[in-house]
Length: 302
Image (cartoon, rainbow, N blue to C red; front, side):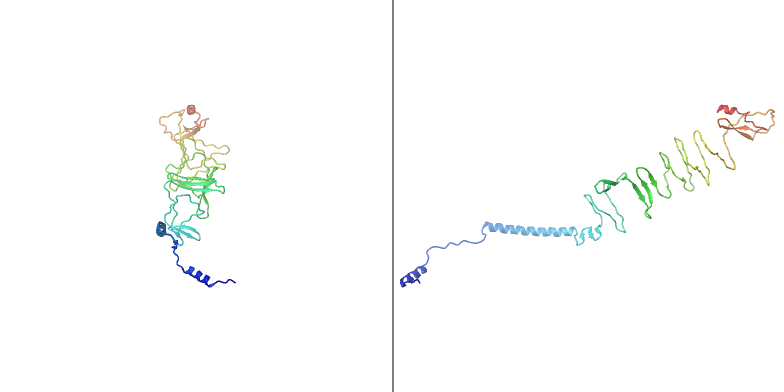
């Protein structure tokens, strides 16, 4: 136990009650001076930037017509994306299917050309359709045009052949149809009240069929014209001409003088048809017997 005398207690209490002569030092807490001004400036700048950004965002949403379903002419539906009005694509567009509305057509427009490409799973080009200002080009292994009802092939083309599946092929050009090679068809017919003309201006015209060629003019004339020679040839059969009247015009007439000429003899109106060894036909004045031998001098001229 510590014991303290009265003098020690009084001395200790007096020393604690004496005023201190030293000045206390104060240290301020916070930001003061130019640092405080800079902080207020940056806070104000941040506030202005936020207000400008908010205003620009609201303006963009208003101009682009953003809605819950999409923006502008673009609408996002359960079936895909729907575009209304005119839309421009500056970069390639990759889609699976493009459909127009039921009451409006689908229009693809470009300042130069419109190209549609098809590729396989390896990215290789398998088909291309280009619509240009001068031509429409299709590059593919097989090109087909089908009917809207039933999907029947109306036209198809590949490297080997071209097939036209329509019931009737109609050529409306004034010059007709020009074929560089052979044509195989079961029937060639002209329009009603129109003439059918098969012509080869510089070469020959050949019609062949394994079971016969039939040329029929039901309501008109049949005319075969050539510049040099017309050959009717049958290798195993016959050439049959069946008509009420068979006329061979412009045949040469041989000269035949009767053994007993008479000045009062009537004008010769009946002739005999004769044939030269080379097949040339000519007429000879008819007599009591054959006069072909008497007027056979025409065969020497041929």
